[in-house]
Image (cartoon, rainbow, N blue to C red):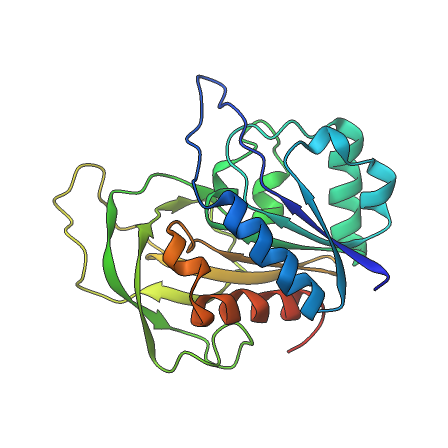
Length: 230
């Protein structure tokens, strides 16, 4: 194990107030650390990014983000992350609320692929598999029954390879805040940024996901893609 998986689960305030705490963060950190070991990575769990030396980030590996709010990355850490991804030394695995972080860091949306823009729905729904050849979805068949928050996004990268989306006709569009963006309702995507790879899934709000072999295989497949498979 010569590469590190940094599992970052920091909850930070928004610019205008406190952010919600996800109760599954400890559970997710344990699961991601176990997946790291299976992938040949050395796990390092971090709940305060001030404890990460930018030199360690610059050395490369995978950055797994289950964050929310204005994660207080220093300018040196931000530079190490951006340069690490684009050079191919560092990959990113974004989980659930990671897209609801770092509004004050302009490059962050490029590195995650989109920004969170609300979640009008929390319900059971079918996730349509739009790319069954990807390691994160190849085990799912045509669709996957999920119980989760359904996120809206803005600024989705044009080159994002959408792997899962909400199947049509399942959501109440009369709910407050409900709308249908031009790019639809993606749940999971991946892309390359420079020589680096980024994978993101919006799923994982409830404990049942982190106890599900199907969901954990979904994450494991995303991690393996970030590491160069597929």
